[in-house]
Length: 143
Image: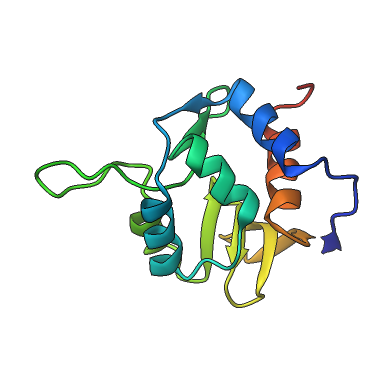
């Protein structure tokens, strides 16, 4: 178990780099993001909030890994597959952000990169920006 220590670019740069390679959706609204964060018990996550304001969810196409976000609410009241609220119910110990591995771990109270099957931690991050940067570097090497 280690703590991430590499230089993390400013949040705006992280967001632009992610948006340049990810498949995006329509922008999230502040109300959707507030509702989602409140419902799942998300701590302060300013970089993730800014990212979701640009795209309510994202997909890294080469790896098929999702950045979970807010859901579309259709007239029938159902939500889409990238809904963080629905997905969190499957993993009570964490709030998955990028795939399942990059998450806010509720018990550890930490942003982390972990293996949920074995409850093994690989990295801890000081904030959501560092975690999003690490996920981007891992999932899109060379960008």
